[in-house]
Image 1 (spheres, rainbow, N blue to C red):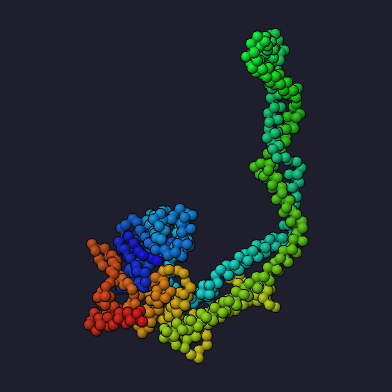
Image 2 (tube, helix red, strand yellow; image 1 turned 30 degrees about the vertical axis):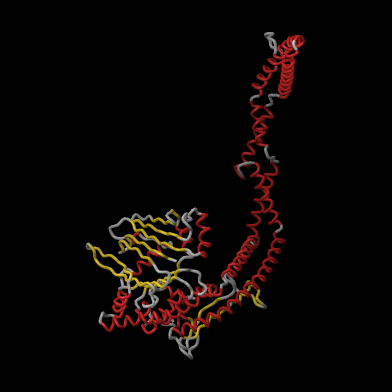
Length: 579
């Protein structure tokens, strides 16, 4: 739940700190005092769009911060994401702080537990924390596109719907492949020619892994054959003889040394080790000389072979420019082209196979969508009964509510029984909430029936029904009493308070109805004044006497009868809570 909200230099608020109750919080005050600005601050902290005009005039930066207490279920949902991003709270993990900083230069910053994050991550973390219903939010209930998601939420069918959506995505992937294979024959023929050329060009090169490095080494040797021959000849001569100045070779000198050490070892056995070391060294020198002699015999100055190597390397470089950075990549591209060519060459067989697979998937999707549709219809009956009960409590006796389902035939749709029905990620259903507000009147779409007050009460009835399955801990309503008279204000207040007592939500409400405000567990009065020729907003937490004065003001006067009425409102709300 939201425990604290701090606002600095935001709109007409210079410095404000609100500590919210875990239950039913009420904000009241004159129009324009800043109540909705407080909710704007909350929405901004949750990842709403920032605007430099939000910064208080004459200031450089607006800073907003919200602190949340996380219960175990929210910790299980949010903490893994915080840990992954290195944002977890080192002091425990049951407190979360979100903040935004908006500057007049256009820059704005988002932070989680004091650490900078991008806006998308802030929104992901904030999404499960608060559900805000603004003054015009209930109008979304008049749009049929919002009705099916609401029904799924009520019935707990989101997981089943996501599973269906995943299967639809698989089908769409298959259909894209099928469409590609059925494309224009001329385009397909051109593709075949290109793929055949790629395969043939790479095959003709007879590339071998590691070949390029070997060719580079050979090219270096062929290009420097004369120098290599001269250097090798000299090395062989130094090792085994053949120098023109009759200088002794290393082999000869080692032989002489061996004879001397042999005599030495004959008279001193301790020198046998040195003799053996010398003999080993002599053997290695002879081996080295032999290896160099073989290398010398293999060396040749061959311009034709050098040209062949150069041409081969140039061919490899040409293929690298076309197909990849090295020979393995080129060969991989060849296999990819060959596989696509094989697929296209046998496209008729592939098309037939895909068409059968598509038909099988459409039949399976039809079964899944039908099963989901049946569960929705069962849930719709329960929702309708609950909404009618809630509407009766809200003095709309005789009102009827129903969820109407419709399906659309489509020649390429999923199979459901003997029909083929249009479908999308949500299934085959089109759902719309219908209502009749007066006995004897037919059910019609809400947008054509409900007045402003009736729509507000219908929205509250729906929210109350859905609250039982809503896991969002904090619900915020901005002037939910719009279009509702004082006669039902007491009932609306009791139902909003019931969201905290029964469904265990934290509720924050901006209201102008004293009967509704009387149910608040914590009552804030928002007012504005002028300090040092600047307009500021201030918020007071009211005790009972303060609440009586505020409710009397909302009734329009501070006369004694109004204050008595305000006290009665509080007493009646307290009795309703305790009853």
